[in-house]
Image 1 (tube, rainbow, N blue to C red):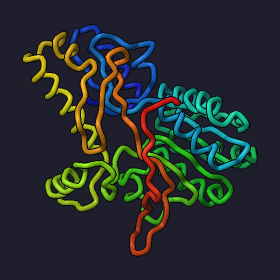
Image 2 (image 1 turned 120 degrees about the horizontal axis):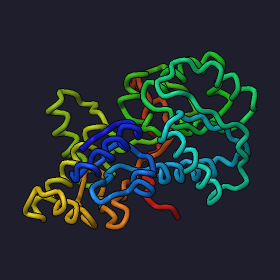
Image 3 (image 1 turned 120 degrees about the vertical axis):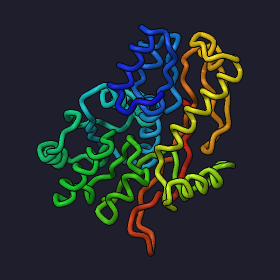
Length: 293
């Protein structure tokens, strides 16, 4: 169970295929894992790049703007998210024209060349999947150029999570709309308030992180599958996981028996300043279900 980057997730999945053991991907999002590289023993309880790209396209449509630049990391997640955004734009906003397509190396720290290209392209929206320190570095370098005053930045990669917003504090830029699986201050779904309170007690922090809920969901699926199968045998666990539904602190989850993909929706919204708080919060919070309508 686990994995972070999609490259790592695909590698773990291949080992699981060869060894005949169950792998539950709780974070990696490349669509390949549950399509072209699907196998009997791989399951995903996180979202995937087509769901994420579709949500980005829906948000872009609501902005009513006409031109878009896209910057992604140059590996499976970035390429597949870019493709997911393009599919979503065809469904929801075919009038939006992509004027620039950029790729940065995984682990890159210098984005000045890409920032200059974006500014020169004159686009109104920037879509992205720069996650973690990639976004932090990009934002710190782009702010002095006034990039975030000129565009609306719509990003996957969970940069709306408290891990990123809390770390960046007042350095978090304006005009960012992004996603997260969970927000410590939002109790949209029954059970979340208790989950968050328990997590806060265990971690010693009122403002808890997003990542624990993903591990929690993965463990819940394993436990439910083991109980249903009455065994930890890989083939029996895999059979039990197909079509399985569980309740989670962020809504019910069901694993599609054909694709082995859970219907993991996400929260999306603008990151805004709040009086008396030294970091950005999402407001309003909108839940986008895992659908491709």
